[in-house]
Amino acid sequence: MTRFRFINGHVATSGGVLPGAEIVVEGDRIAAIGAVEGSGDAIDLNGGWVVPGYIDTQVNGGGGVLFNDRLDVDGIAAMAAAHAVYGTTAMLPTLVSETPDKIARALDAIDEAIEAKVPGIVGIHVEGPVLNPARKGIHDPSRFRDLDEEMVAVLTRPRRGKVMLTIAPERVPVSTIERLVQAGVLVSAGHSEASYEQAMAAFDAGLSGITHLFNAMPAMQQRVPGLAGATLDDPRPYSGLIIDGFHVAAPMLRLALKARPFDRLMLVTDAMSSVGAVEKDFVLHGRHIDVSGGKCTYADGTLAGSDLDMGAAVANAVEQLRITVDQATAMAATHPAAFLGLSHERGALQVGLRADWVVLDAALKPVETRIASAETVAA
Image (tube, rainbow, N blue to C red):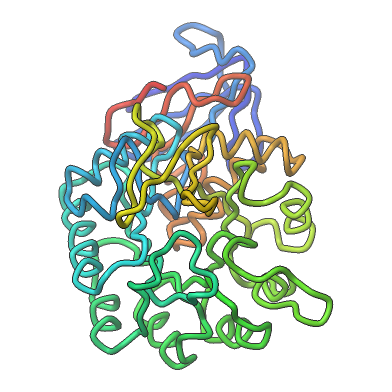
């Protein structure tokens, strides 16, 4: 057993925020959490925090690596290592609309990475190519296609980790959504022009996620609520929010907070290869993407993912949503763990769960990330 003793700060456990705590770790699990007696051999948080490790369900790249370009274990490991510095202890590398053969290769690569025990890899997010061209964003519409039986077979094959799929629900029959869900695929709606009625039918079929709420979907209107309106009206789906100051205005974020069940809101980064990289600019599907001032844009001004890390996302959530630190970290850890069906493993500082956590300074900047069964990462 190993004992970690934290004082003079805040420890966000599943039972509440403590002013300090002793966390006992056995193997890769938390064996006990209790009060600290004395201050010898203790880690002084100096007003900082210990919070559960962040879980990011939308990571296109990091550390100079774009997942689309590196469908191999080493590339995936480089992405995970880059994001670990910012508190991410679990993630879904995300493939931006690709051809069926590359989707199959990406799924296999994630299986190989999990088998190789790459720290933090818990599955894959396949974003597209079954999207609506009218809401393409930075995706290449020449890669868009219908969801045929061959692709369904590839997506529903047993995998070592979670498989998340973003679709435009208006392009997929409800019966096919049901088949995907029954096979264990986490189906999410995004890059879509779905009507309120189409969205509700998809929710009824088991679609459980909304990919970057408000982005790449029509604005709500008084008589045409659309996908965004359906999401605010229905308590079931988990909604990803990109809080970087560019994707969604703060008042709209607070509207989502007021309208939706809190435990259905998740922070995501939609991070590109620029996160943790020295050279920020990158190329996606042959198009040069400029990264400056924390913003990723194509020449025509289209946002191309983000230069956001989860550490900054948490700090931004506290400021823009006007919520507490433990609430923001729940959006970064507890809620995505529930969405992924991993609450029995991750997402909280709780006895029996993995000993994954992040140490934050008083300004909420990650200074140390602990991933169970891996080395501690210093920011």
